[in-house]
Every structure is written in structure tokens, then in C-alpha cells.
Image (cartoon, helix red, strand yellow):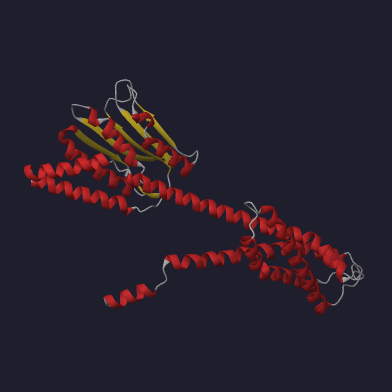
Length: 369
């Protein structure tokens, strides 16, 4: 099979974005059918028992047909109901007006469907023997409409709740994307400036180092786009970016920075928030190592225990002996907010600075593959 054939097949194959709406539509159809057939299936035994107590006894065929026909009729009309819920949402300034329209529409639809269902059953099976045989069509419609209207309103309420939930999830997804974009846009401009300035200096002193810096910076920028705006990425991807960042810092700081990695291989495929390590690593370099005249050390670690993923970044800098932005820095504040949003109470960010110096930022997250 040549390349042209492969390209044509790739173009003809449905994309994930094209398949997703179709799956959503079929899922909606399945939920609608489940609701109506489930409801009328639940009340079927009550109808059978009621018929058994009548003088003429139960008519199983009539009861099954009547309930299944009603379920099918309500399912067929459900697209109209869904359109009404979207056209007249019970929210905003017109919520009371729209609520009244929903009740009026529900009453009309319920009366129509009860009438059609009763006439369909009557045409096939005739009137009941005993029981409600003396009831007129108007009385039957009145009695059945009284409770089916509540079922209609329950269906509408469920649809509204699901739409609000989906809207909330979409807003949360967009918020996560915006946070990731903002974090990546805040990749320290001073770091980029210092790197480019170092490239300029080494171009005259050591062309090989200048070339390495250019390659590393290019890799770093490429990796910053690799994860896209996804809220979570594999730890291996997150570590790749942090490694490249620290490699550049080691060249810039020369022998003043030593890096140690303590990574459990089992943790590499665990999912972590996109760009979560960068603020911690940058915090260690800027507030820890750059403040030391002598050589400093940074350790970046990851381990898994009891279903939890633990990440840590530590340095042997001056710690927090003096008021510092390390304690309440923007990067750490954003990290806390993102973790709370993504994991709720199932996460923890701990900052530790012993009296003798040093600083450790530890993350504990649920281990998600």
C-alpha cells in the first residue's frame, strides 16, 4: 500500500471530532428511551394488579400494549420537549415566564398523548370489562393527566439539570485550559532573557556551548507546547520539560547548580496537572540556588505509595528564614488553586523549611493512570 493510498484512507476515515457528536446524540436517545420505557415499565405491574381486582380479570396484552405504546409515544415527542427546554430555559430574567410556558406546554402534550394512547388501546382491545368501563374519555384524560404532568415536569427538570452540569463541566474545562495557557505564558521572561543573553556571550567565547543553549532552549519551547492545553499529562512529559529547564540553568549557573533526580519508574505514566512542576522548580532555582555564593543542590523526586503519587522539589538554599515570596508567591498560589480545583480535598501541597536552611515543596496527589 503506497503513501497516496494511506493518505486517502486517512482522509476518508472519520475523525474523533466527527464521531464524538454522533456518540453524544445516540447517548441522548438511549437516555430518553430508558426514562420513558423505564417509567411505564415500573407502573405496568400496578396496572396488572388493578385489572386482576376487577370483575373481568386482567388482560395482560392490553396492559402491556398500553404501557409500551405510551412509552413509545412519549419517546417520539421527547425531541419537541427537549427543544422546548432549550428554547425556554428556566433561568435568567425570564425564568418565571418560561416556567409557565413549560407547564402550559406540558399540559397540552400530556392531554394529547393520554388521549392518543387511550384511543389506540380502545381500538384494539375495546373498553375494559368492569372497573372504569363507565368512565368517559374526558374523565380518563383528566385522571391520567393529573399524574403524567408531574412526570413530564420531572423529565424537564432532569434535562435542565444535565444541561447545567454539562455547562459547568465545559466552563471548568475552559478554565483549566486558560490556567495552563497563563502559566506557560508566564515562563519567566528573565530566564528567557538571560538564556538569550548567554547565547550571545558564548557565541564569541565558546560556540559549542552557545549551540547547546540554542538547542536546549528550542527543545524547552517545543516541550512547552507538546502537552497543549490538556489539564493533565503523564509525569514523564512533565519531567522532560523540567529536566530541560534545569539543564539550561546548569549551563547558565555553571558549577553553582547540581541536580539529582529520584524518580520511581512506576510513577512515570501517572497523570499530573500540566505544568505543575515548573513553578516549584523555578522557585527552587530563583529563591534557593541563585542566592547562594557556593554550589547548591536541587532534588526532584517522585514516588508512589498506597495509591498516592508524591512529588517533591527540594533545595539547600537559605530557606524561609526571612520574609520571602517563596511562601506566598504567585506561582505557588496558582498551584494551590489548580490542585484544589482538579482534586478537591484529595491533594496536598506542603512547604517545609528547616531552621538550618533548605526548602522542600511536596505534592501529594491521587495516582491516576
